[in-house]
Image 1 (tube, rainbow, N blue to C red):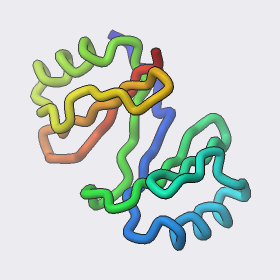
Image 2: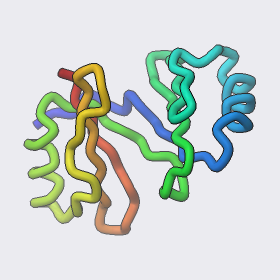
Image 3: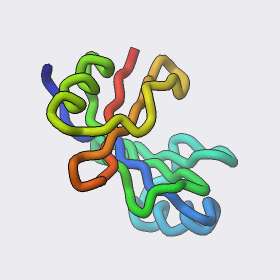
Length: 112
């Protein structure tokens, strides 16, 4: 089952407003999504998101896939562990996370 590549990277942040200022300066663009619970940028063919109060210690890269359940089954069979089951995050997009054998958190997303 193919993977289309990394299309989204989410960064957990403690202070969304402070992080937004830094990422806006870094990326040289205003956010395409700007709310109290999520700030997102579309730059260079990728989506960079800021997630407040995130539990992760670093950014989580999300690979685009055609079949999220199928891909999760493949990574589970290969030794990965499902962390967050697929869920709808709006606009027909579904996301899920899993850990690799070293505990690194990875994500997959499927657009509907």
